[in-house]
Length: 181
Image (cartoon, rainbow, N blue to C red):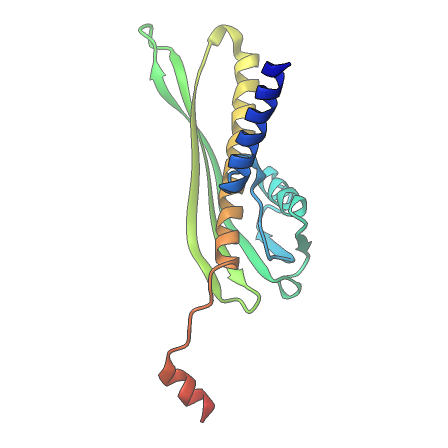
């Protein structure tokens, strides 16, 4: 009984410590103080576009159909997936592949003013390849690509959150006086 109560107290203290320091799970990717976002992309039905839209909705953010209806706009300028040989075996066969997912985005305010200039975000993974088990290795590559896409979405949401919660730039006293006159 004494061990159980010590364990319960330890768990409660650990939980209180983690909650008090602001720690949260990596996958939470919360965005605060944003009500609506418009996503602009050439490939509106791509996996990345769909996953980004889903992540915004999970944060209770309305995905607007038009940029004029949205508080912010995320402009997806390009999205690229790549796979290249990372290493070869002694018998000159591929033993590892490097996967790369890259997205270039901009974030605009409702008035069209750029809040985040053209930024390229990248996620890379290396995985072992076995030519005797091609199907399962392709499944693994697809799983890695999905994880990489989620990582890129977390990066986009993080940048959206930072520009949305950026403190307003103070107006210099000389500008305040000029505006008052």
